[in-house]
Image 1 (spheres, rainbow, N blue to C red):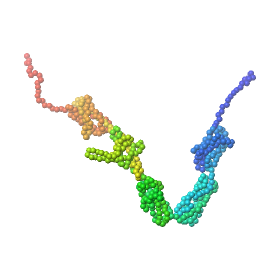
Image 2: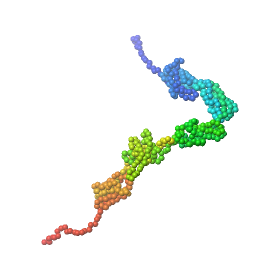
Image 3: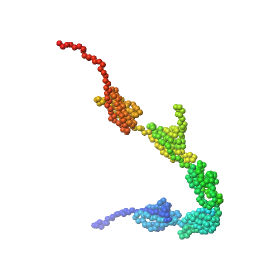
Image 4: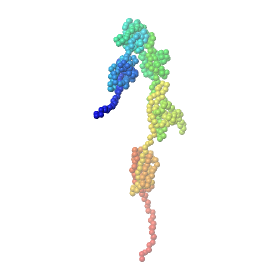
Length: 503
């Protein structure tokens, strides 16, 4: 401060935040562009590792976190691939994404090819040429086969299949394209001996592999020049001879679970050709349910439902139960007034169920599944669903009205009101109260008449009273008093028979 020669000190502070970025990207295969999982990504600066490597996930993605500002290099390595580098990764004040890299599989040259199938083949038959590449992890594995020399065999190689028409020797070449390097193939030649072979051709077996079905053996032409014979076999080439000399065979119970063969021979060529079913023989499909009907419960206890039309070949269960129960159909015997039933009682969900004469009775309400049970020759059939409906009370309605005197419209108390249908009286009569009113309750839908009677009155009828879906009121009636003519039989003078004369 001026004036006294002293200088005042001023203090201040500077606050700043160090930014740490993330670096992310994806590592993929250069051939297929597919993700490389488990690739190691190492962050480096000035040739030194920064922290530990991170590893790509199943999608080939990686993220390196907590990277301060600077310039870095990413070194990427993965088993079976040449390593790769992402250079000049500059971190300033923002996260960095898209640092992707494609790795190239490490090239391993082919050292040898071994022919793995037979080096000889009968004339007229086909040989699918097969080989094994050494080492097993060579970068190129696909072998291309071609004919070098047919000699006198008439050999051809088409799509890797060798065939020849005459005995002799032929030479084939196996090539792995770019098997030695990206610019050099690996090749090796093999000699195949063609022998004068037995019967050639193929046998295919068509048909449904289930009990009761018919199989057909089809000989696809080879070198046969004679008459063919067919021998069906169960259980392999050394198994049991079955059927007759025919190109068809119908499957029987004993075939279930077995493989069926057909051995085809010729009376001109030696040897045989064999066709085999593509799998083991199964049971026939189960039948679908027909003729079964559910009957609803008829009481509030909901325990008298029925399934009718079942047979002993069926089984059933309530939906939610763990297993099916076999249907046991009994019989009914009537002897005089006695009725007896034979057949098993079946318990379902704790309730005793009696099965008599093609019906399952005593069922609780709910959904039931019925199917034909599996047998030695048939699978269980498809389940059909049946719903045993719960008891549904039939709705009832009421009819009401007023009975009056036709002369003065005064109410008639104690008049009897009776509901009737075409069969007669329905229920008990009701009686009018002091106001002449009546109400009949518990009436089912239908057409009725109402008959009204009262002492001293002629009876009356209200016809064609239709009860549909609601209570009915206003069914009134005027009754006419009964008028009965009574003749005079006498007259009696009720006052004195004498009188005093006037004075």
